[in-house]
Length: 266
Image 1 (tube, rainbow, N blue to C red):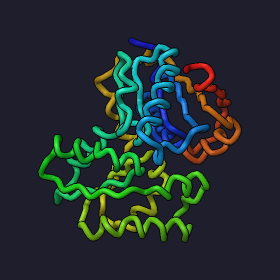
Image 2 (image 1 turned 120 degrees about the vertical axis):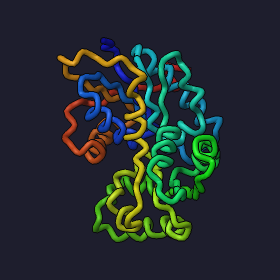
Image 3 (image 1 turned 90 degrees about the vertical axis):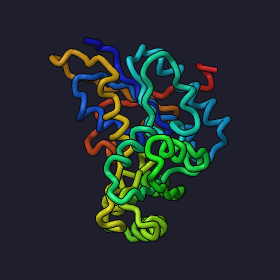
Image 4 (image 1 turned 180 degrees about the vertical axis):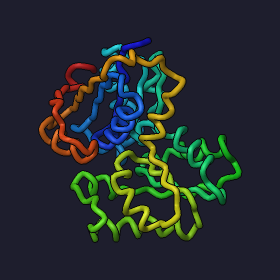
């Protein structure tokens, strides 16, 4: 058995969807989560900035001696995975999501909705060409969806959210996709709206697929124990705890701790 924690990184809050999946799949594991809430969003930043921020986050998380890293951020997974090459298994959201989409598509037409930085890198397209070159990938960036989610506009009755998602989904409908990768870990909170806009289309949850990808990569913890969860953020711990309820769908009893990576890690 290996009781070291699993460390999870995100640029903000969306990675909590991966934390929820990890808690369900591996209830015996201790989880350490760092959300870079002081510098979010990463999706519109340069690759140089994303790489620097990700390197600082990796160094911080490695101080906890984790047995694995989950990069629950689509942008960091596409633009800065090398920052997490720290000698332990590191799982991003790109390859697991692509593998899942390739496995479930029936007509070979897959859509990707992700941040501008994720789309710009071409990482999903390159991974799909390698894994399943026969599949046609239609990509679009969903730059307006992260602020929508963080404003709590996620309900199926929200007309603004529904209209925006309808606009984003139009190219996927025109392309005839039967599978859509939600390539940002915020987007699963809008799953009901995506399902309404794209009936019959299979939605691939990037955070869940990253959590599933840990199977076989780690030695699991003592099954007689109950795993713990620690939250770290780079700004606004109280605001994080309030919004975390929406992502984890439960009350947050674990108080987030604030760390300054620029001050302590550079």
